[in-house]
Image (cartoon, rainbow, N blue to C red; front, side, top):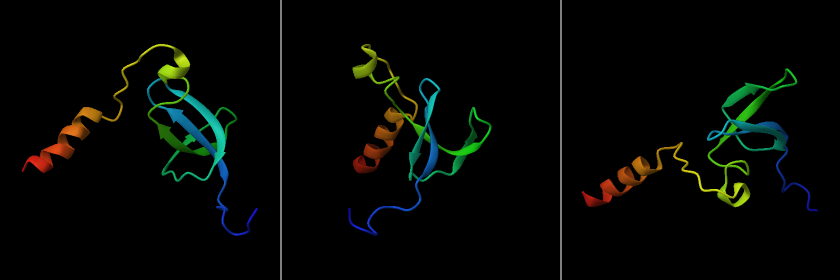
Length: 84
């Protein structure tokens, strides 16, 4: 493994699926401005996910409508600029 090409800021981070409130703790260097108090009483950085293995149709076997980020509104805003 080459030296100096990997990030040094690996730490424990909580990833939270916003569609069903499932959260898990893992090591990551993903940037985060939010934090959350975890089950062990410690506070960790929080990374919000739109979809995870607990809500993805491939893993659950059923289709779910997930619109946590207002995808339709984002689409309309993006292409409304091009019409003008």
